Image (cartoon, rainbow, N blue to C red; front, side, top):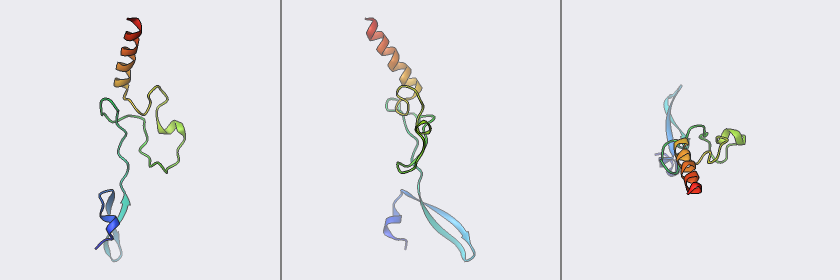
Length: 88
């Protein structure tokens, strides 16, 4: 039996062929894609990194307003609403 901490679904099982037969290795599952806060669609241009993984700031999220939080569709709607409120 595998140790208790590896029975969680956050660990993925990888079958590895060794000289003594097929063994199962355990690795952490990759983080899920980032999703838009409004529409729930997966965001493009946002890296799937662990918080401990080092990456430059530009690789973590797009360089635009609400980058890494809102999808481009939701961002466009938000800007249109803001402009319409200013006009009235």
